[in-house]
Amino acid sequence: MSDEKVSAEPSTAEAAQDTATESPGLTERQAKLLLRMLRVMFPHPTFPDDPYDRAAKAVTEASLTDSVLPDGLDITDEVAGGDFLALSDQDATDLLAQITESDLFRRLHATFVVAFYDDHQVWDLLGYEGSSFDKGGYLHRGFDDLDWLPRPRISEYDGEPRIELVADGRAS
Image 1 (cartoon, one colour):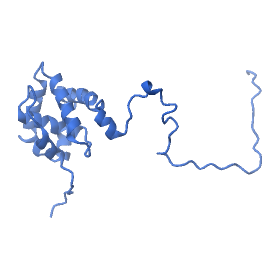
Image 2 (cartoon, rainbow, N blue to C red; image 1 turned 180 degrees about the horizontal axis):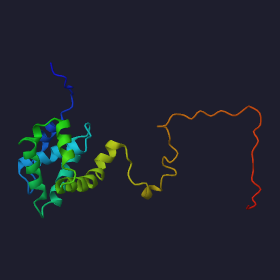
Image 3 (cartoon, one colour; image 1 turned 90 degrees about the vertical axis):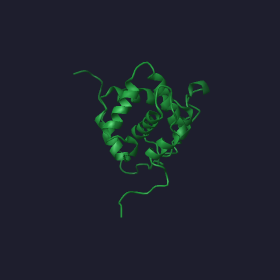
Image 4 (cartoon, one colour; image 1 turned 120 degrees about the vertical axis):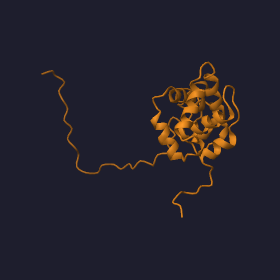
Protein backbone atom coordinates (compact mmCIF):
# COMPACT_ATOMS: atom_id res chain seq x y z
CA MET A 1 0.00 0.00 0.00
CA SER A 2 1.26 3.48 -0.86
CA ASP A 3 1.95 6.18 1.72
CA GLU A 4 0.80 8.91 -0.67
CA LYS A 5 -2.01 11.16 0.48
CA VAL A 6 -5.25 10.98 -1.45
CA SER A 7 -6.99 14.29 -1.98
CA ALA A 8 -10.29 15.30 -3.50
CA GLU A 9 -8.51 18.30 -5.01
CA PRO A 10 -6.73 17.66 -8.32
CA SER A 11 -2.97 17.77 -8.15
CA THR A 12 -1.26 20.67 -9.85
CA ALA A 13 -0.23 18.24 -12.60
CA GLU A 14 -3.84 17.23 -13.26
CA ALA A 15 -5.03 20.83 -13.18
CA ALA A 16 -2.35 21.88 -15.67
CA GLN A 17 -3.20 19.06 -18.05
CA ASP A 18 -6.94 19.72 -17.88
CA THR A 19 -6.97 23.48 -18.47
CA ALA A 20 -3.98 24.50 -20.57
CA THR A 21 -4.70 25.43 -24.15
CA GLU A 22 -2.35 26.49 -26.88
CA SER A 23 -0.97 29.99 -26.31
CA PRO A 24 0.48 32.32 -28.93
CA GLY A 25 4.14 31.42 -29.41
CA LEU A 26 3.83 28.17 -27.46
CA THR A 27 2.87 24.67 -28.43
CA GLU A 28 0.03 22.99 -26.55
CA ARG A 29 2.60 20.96 -24.59
CA GLN A 30 4.55 24.10 -23.65
CA ALA A 31 1.35 25.83 -22.53
CA LYS A 32 0.60 22.86 -20.24
CA LEU A 33 4.18 22.94 -18.92
CA LEU A 34 3.90 26.67 -18.22
CA LEU A 35 0.66 26.32 -16.29
CA ARG A 36 2.05 23.40 -14.27
CA MET A 37 5.22 25.31 -13.44
CA LEU A 38 3.23 28.34 -12.29
CA ARG A 39 0.97 26.22 -10.09
CA VAL A 40 4.03 24.59 -8.51
CA MET A 41 5.89 27.88 -8.05
CA PHE A 42 2.86 29.67 -6.58
CA PRO A 43 0.68 27.01 -4.99
CA HIS A 44 -2.85 27.97 -4.04
CA PRO A 45 -4.57 24.56 -4.12
CA THR A 46 -8.06 25.93 -3.58
CA PHE A 47 -7.82 28.59 -6.30
CA PRO A 48 -9.61 27.94 -9.59
CA ASP A 49 -7.74 27.77 -12.88
CA ASP A 50 -8.95 31.11 -14.28
CA PRO A 51 -6.41 33.40 -12.54
CA TYR A 52 -3.59 31.00 -13.37
CA ASP A 53 -4.71 30.93 -17.01
CA ARG A 54 -4.78 34.73 -17.19
CA ALA A 55 -1.35 35.01 -15.57
CA ALA A 56 0.06 32.35 -17.93
CA LYS A 57 -1.28 34.38 -20.85
CA ALA A 58 0.46 37.49 -19.46
CA VAL A 59 3.73 35.56 -19.13
CA THR A 60 3.40 34.30 -22.69
CA GLU A 61 2.59 37.75 -24.08
CA ALA A 62 5.57 39.24 -22.24
CA SER A 63 7.81 36.61 -23.83
CA LEU A 64 6.88 36.91 -27.51
CA THR A 65 10.03 38.84 -28.47
CA ASP A 66 12.56 36.13 -27.60
CA SER A 67 12.86 32.39 -27.09
CA VAL A 68 13.51 32.38 -23.33
CA LEU A 69 10.08 30.96 -22.51
CA PRO A 70 9.68 28.19 -25.11
CA ASP A 71 13.32 27.12 -24.90
CA GLY A 72 13.29 27.20 -21.10
CA LEU A 73 10.11 25.14 -20.94
CA ASP A 74 11.56 22.53 -23.30
CA ILE A 75 14.83 22.34 -21.34
CA THR A 76 12.98 22.01 -18.03
CA ASP A 77 10.88 19.21 -19.50
CA GLU A 78 14.07 17.44 -20.67
CA VAL A 79 15.73 17.82 -17.27
CA ALA A 80 12.61 16.27 -15.73
CA GLY A 81 13.22 13.13 -17.77
CA GLY A 82 10.98 14.21 -20.62
CA ASP A 83 7.77 14.60 -18.63
CA PHE A 84 7.64 17.48 -16.15
CA LEU A 85 3.85 17.13 -16.09
CA ALA A 86 4.15 13.65 -14.56
CA LEU A 87 6.36 14.75 -11.66
CA SER A 88 4.87 14.85 -8.18
CA ASP A 89 4.44 18.31 -6.71
CA GLN A 90 7.48 17.78 -4.48
CA ASP A 91 9.70 16.56 -7.33
CA ALA A 92 8.56 19.45 -9.51
CA THR A 93 9.31 21.89 -6.68
CA ASP A 94 12.77 20.36 -6.20
CA LEU A 95 13.52 20.66 -9.90
CA LEU A 96 12.35 24.28 -10.02
CA ALA A 97 14.50 25.07 -6.99
CA GLN A 98 17.52 24.07 -9.11
CA ILE A 99 16.73 26.64 -11.81
CA THR A 100 15.96 29.71 -9.69
CA GLU A 101 18.87 31.62 -11.24
CA SER A 102 17.81 30.88 -14.83
CA ASP A 103 16.37 33.43 -17.24
CA LEU A 104 13.21 31.31 -17.47
CA PHE A 105 12.61 31.30 -13.72
CA ARG A 106 13.27 35.02 -13.42
CA ARG A 107 10.87 35.75 -16.27
CA LEU A 108 8.16 33.53 -14.81
CA HIS A 109 8.56 35.02 -11.35
CA ALA A 110 8.68 38.67 -12.39
CA THR A 111 5.73 38.51 -14.75
CA PHE A 112 3.53 36.08 -12.84
CA VAL A 113 3.68 37.87 -9.48
CA VAL A 114 2.38 41.10 -10.99
CA ALA A 115 -0.24 39.52 -13.27
CA PHE A 116 -1.56 37.02 -10.72
CA TYR A 117 -1.65 39.09 -7.55
CA ASP A 118 -3.12 42.08 -9.39
CA ASP A 119 -6.06 39.94 -10.54
CA HIS A 120 -9.28 40.98 -8.81
CA GLN A 121 -10.46 37.38 -8.58
CA VAL A 122 -7.29 36.59 -6.61
CA TRP A 123 -7.98 39.61 -4.41
CA ASP A 124 -11.40 38.18 -3.61
CA LEU A 125 -9.96 34.74 -2.91
CA LEU A 126 -7.34 36.22 -0.57
CA GLY A 127 -9.82 38.53 1.16
CA TYR A 128 -8.14 41.72 -0.05
CA GLU A 129 -10.63 44.53 -0.63
CA GLY A 130 -8.39 46.47 -2.96
CA SER A 131 -7.31 50.07 -2.79
CA SER A 132 -8.93 52.08 -0.03
CA PHE A 133 -7.82 55.52 -1.20
CA ASP A 134 -10.73 56.01 -3.59
CA LYS A 135 -13.15 54.91 -0.86
CA GLY A 136 -11.94 57.44 1.72
CA GLY A 137 -9.06 55.49 3.23
CA TYR A 138 -9.00 52.85 5.93
CA LEU A 139 -9.84 55.02 8.92
CA HIS A 140 -13.57 54.31 8.72
CA ARG A 141 -13.31 51.11 6.72
CA GLY A 142 -11.76 48.53 9.01
CA PHE A 143 -8.68 50.33 10.30
CA ASP A 144 -9.61 49.26 13.83
CA ASP A 145 -11.26 45.98 12.82
CA LEU A 146 -9.19 43.49 14.75
CA ASP A 147 -11.73 40.69 14.95
CA TRP A 148 -9.08 38.31 13.64
CA LEU A 149 -6.98 38.80 16.81
CA PRO A 150 -7.85 37.32 20.21
CA ARG A 151 -9.40 39.73 22.68
CA PRO A 152 -6.67 41.31 24.84
CA ARG A 153 -6.66 40.51 28.54
CA ILE A 154 -6.94 43.84 30.31
CA SER A 155 -6.76 44.04 34.09
CA GLU A 156 -5.96 46.92 36.39
CA TYR A 157 -3.03 46.82 38.75
CA ASP A 158 -4.33 46.78 42.30
CA GLY A 159 -1.07 46.48 44.25
CA GLU A 160 1.05 49.06 46.03
CA PRO A 161 1.65 52.30 44.09
CA ARG A 162 4.77 52.15 41.95
CA ILE A 163 7.51 54.74 42.22
CA GLU A 164 8.34 56.41 38.93
CA LEU A 165 11.82 57.86 38.46
CA VAL A 166 11.82 61.04 36.43
CA ALA A 167 14.98 62.67 35.17
CA ASP A 168 15.32 66.36 35.96
CA GLY A 169 16.06 67.19 32.30
CA ARG A 170 19.51 68.69 32.90
CA ALA A 171 22.35 67.59 30.65
CA SER A 172 25.31 66.14 32.49
